[in-house]
Image (cartoon, rainbow, N blue to C red; front, side, top):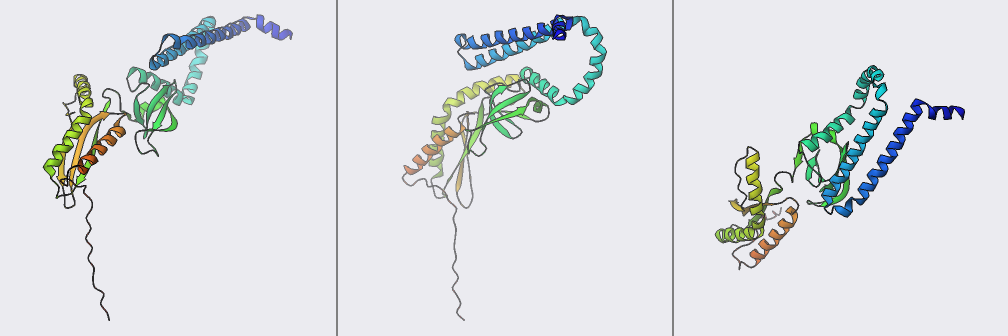
Length: 294
């Protein structure tokens, strides 16, 4: 008991107590600030960034307090830290790479919270970026479409140095998509092109204007050529049917719903065409050979 008392009144004991008290005070202060943030900030993205900023400030303050408390011993620790540093760096190389990845993500604009990305074959929306790992709300997988499947995937931030990062919503938050419509070769293809283009234009026009503005910004920032964001239709045919390929830009989160609307309107137009248009299907010719009686 006497030794414990002596420890707490010693120089080292006082420093440790100072650090522990500082840690508790920083934690309480940060918790209070994060608790009152929703009262003053309504936007979810701004609240998230503010909470992250509070956490980072808390870490920095704690490190400064430790350095200040042990400042008179830093000179003697220099040699020890130099020897131990190499071993620690080797043992924690993945952790260090993840921290470097965290810095690169925020400084190089790889992605931000809310972006839809693909990393390592996994597609999802970024829901959290921590010091070591990024969390994704996964889409696709066993779900046929760009919808959430309910699985949250966590990946180390170090992947930004070793794998490509596909951002679906970064500088250009639109995707090009195509819908192929097969009709019979006996159909009125000129009428079909006109009808399909009008449907495509009516549904997709709202995206074309926004996409044009974003692409104009892209050409000013990157070395990319002017792209055609207006809806377009191309046609091809073979011995089975005529294929119309409807190409259009769409918001990266509305690809499936837009395809559903287009398909519904196209089928309705074919149904109301009075026989001018018929859905193409594979033709099969069956030849029967008579059975030879012996």
